[in-house]
Length: 273
Image 1 (cartoon, one colour):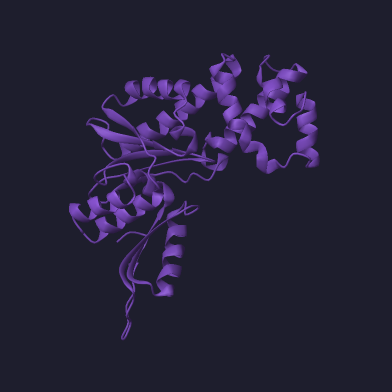
Image 2 (cartoon, one colour):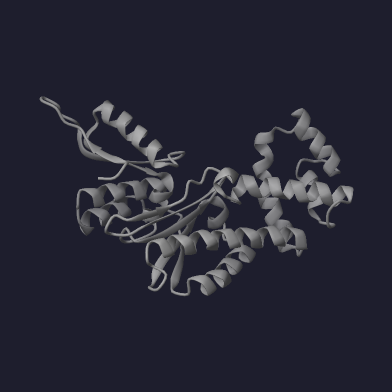
């Protein structure tokens, strides 16, 4: 059942697989999952199909049963949760229009904003004003703004500034540290709301953190996440997911067909997880 699952049938239909679970980027809304599911069913690969947002794969890869919450922070930021009875918690995670803040791309844009204002005097002084242009071999934020605007530095390279932001924060810059702490607040807000929706706030439950920004385990970010989560969800147990998302998709597929723990163990062994 649910918007992302359906079966294929028909006389003489002989699909290659009993079931396919696909965990896909940009399948952010149930209506998108339904459309993607219908397309996969038309391919005739399996008798039934379940489509999830790819964040569900990261969550399932990090837990032994389909119970808990995951926050993923890579280029963007997203959070999902699930329970063994099939209930889920999720957010649209489309960007600012859906209330999101953070992710590697968003952090880079924030760093640029604060650095520009630090240099021209509208904002607080910050080492970001020198560190960001220096990453591209430039001397000033004005030069970096010009280079981005004219395409001399492609906009697609802005994500390279996120590690610079974390480095400047670790060196003690208050502006950079403020951005890192705000990201921690977002991670904890997502986690606590998802746990609450699933009724898991009052019991021990995993909160798995994944994606390039969180998996890097920047000490200032991780410490602040632990502090804030201890206040809002004291029974939550933080873990980090480094296993490939395809493992989680496979485990979700095994859940769907009630394959049992032995099959899950073999799959984890295959991926070294």
